Length: 307
Image 1 (cartoon, rainbow, N blue to C red):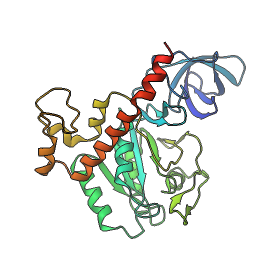
Image 2 (tube, rainbow, N blue to C red):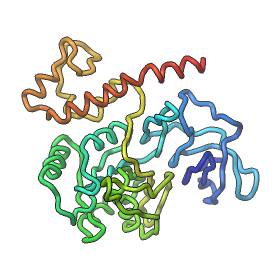
Image 3 (spheres, rainbow, N blue to C red):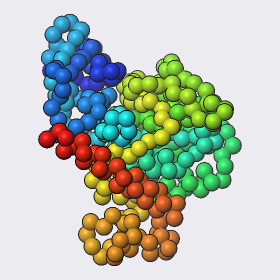
């Protein structure tokens, strides 16, 4: 039987049967699910799982089908990649103008953590005063090919356009704590997810969603993910980072496989100097690359220990 994972808490899953529409509480069959890649929490919300019921409301999951997309992050505590949402058509990165502050580098890391899904950058709380640098940054993201949208749960700005974009697809909502992600989802779906206020001492959001959750209503399907203060890009082939930076497609480097951090024959410094890529975006790219390179020994050590 095939199931869609709707909620994941401590390796206990809420699973929707795709055969008869019944809801099951599911667990992994055996202690460890076999996968080609070691990963923290091998089953994620949005996964299509294969298993069998063993009671009217309980089931065992033995495997998951190959994911067509995923939002993943690096779990620093476990030193493993962790999938937060799977099989989404679109990843919506929710931001706010000032409370908490708009952070382009957070957006860049979120884009680099999403694979196989289109990207939508949402500026929530658009009824607040929007600093000029935020408008400039959103314009830049639009010019390089990312869709952006200003919305407000208070004034209603942009909500009709957002609902139209969400219709008929699965969208994973990700963002910093305090940007109003759960409030926005409540407004869209008319649900009552728990919400919280921003900490005025640190101008950071308090965590209100502590696990991913699949929500669906009137043709709109959303995966609400836990708010975070930081996102660490998952460890993978370093060349994949460039996919989050469309400007790098214009690079004509001397050697194939160039990672674009100034090695011999790299054309990206000239691209930046000529205005083909902003200095801020290039610096963001280099920081992501550096964080992955510094993490490599830990990841490789764990891989070797498993052999």
